[in-house]
Length: 331
Ligand SMILES: [Zn+2]
View 1 (cartoon, rainbow, N blue to C red):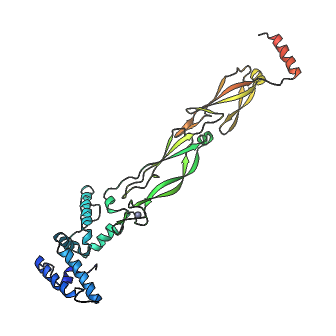
View 2: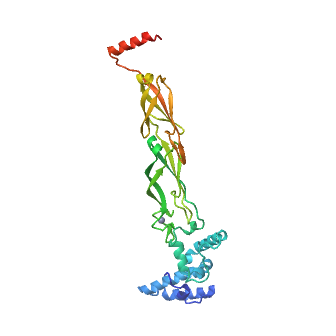
View 3: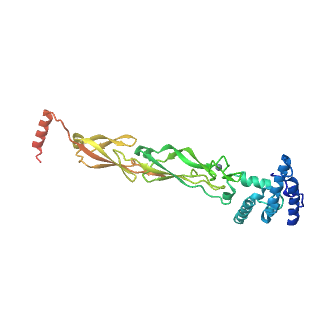
């Protein structure tokens, strides 16, 4: 039926009056009625065509739509809605957007129809009007203190919206909501991405990765990705801002006589000379050995706190020496 001219089917002119259309229909319906032509398939088909043509042309509203849009007349409302949106769009986007002609030229409609319902563009016409920035995404990331100290990278999985391939993002197929995306025009897709985590991040840091959020709509820019950092607590190091605190076990003799001790840092050990008679609990500041600060060259300090370790499991000889010592220096 599609493509056949209803006026031609009824054998009337395009400007025929309602009365002329009615008369033509009655004449043809009598001629091709199945009762008059039993078993004649072609007469039956013609009869159906005549009825379909009359149904449209006898209705004022439908006839007007048919005159304007031809065999796409059923989509008239959508065409007009789209044209209206399009003209609104032009108001705030001078020169932008396609120009549509909804005139009486039926032949030119195919391309419009294709554009509106065939998904020739990446997004459906009901969204295309306003370019929209994609949503920001947030991804929680947990790192060790060592990783925060040196900087690291992670491969993360993100659930991204992508234009539906079935409807090419239009959301509609043949004027029906797309079944693949349920008319949304987008589908969720898991995307893997390698991200860099700069040195110096702390719990609560938000690392921005520009343009890696959800894609924009209708030519809008992509959103950003934010890495929400948590630094796991460390069994040895305590962090206070950019400074690190660490306990350093020091043998009694070294604390008393002075000497060298090994201070742990997040990337290995450092030798530290301690003076004689170093008291338990004294902290030594190792300047610039603390955490880096993102975007700054200066680093925090490492505070090494002396933790004097008293000897255990003393031999008889050692006990004797401590006894002698206590006699020389009574408390
Ligand atoms: Zn779809």
